[in-house]
Image 1 (cartoon, helix red, strand yellow):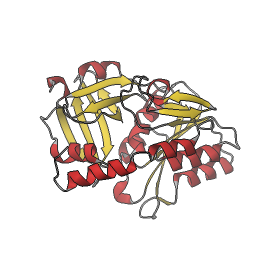
Image 2: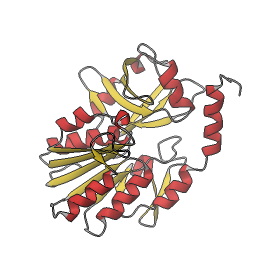
Image 3: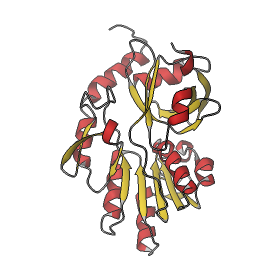
Length: 282
């Protein structure tokens, strides 16, 4: 394993969400908001894409946040710690977020998607935008990066599905209320579960507010060669790894994206269950 990809910090943000800092000097120097890396634990491991949440060019480190949803993320959470290293960390990949002074922007993050929206929010604030952020999770215990988001926002609204903290309801409802109140909104950035992004896009469509979403289809090589991450945007086939991961939310075929994300659910669940049971065969 490369000494460049050593884990320098690890922190549990919730029961299933983990933050890691990894030594990757070249990536730390070049990465921009919205870009991601592809990680591989070892020679037999799968390649998984994860957004670069933050970086420190001087220290030569990048920060990632992931949720335990399958075998690889479970191994990362359970088996890897400070001093361990990834075999591969490839990046920065994807097109950076289009950052400029749009005026007043709303950044919407759901679940672990808050980790993805954070670097974008930070960059938008640094570019001079007035930033209203709406973040949400199922319960209070699953809310992440609240302090970090507050530090880069002019206003932060926290939501929980069960009402255990902040606004009782979905992030889309808060956004809908802001629009209905007549507040000027020049652009919306929404990142989170596919159903959430779809609803946000439908909320902003009648008002004609440009809405950017970040898509998370299955990826393999992340260079545009394998075609695994193809999505339909505006009736055209695009590849999330090289054409995205961000697209106009009003043009994304979310139904097709959902179907593609479910293609390997059975195999993923089987691999995760075998890992949980300690089965290490082929």
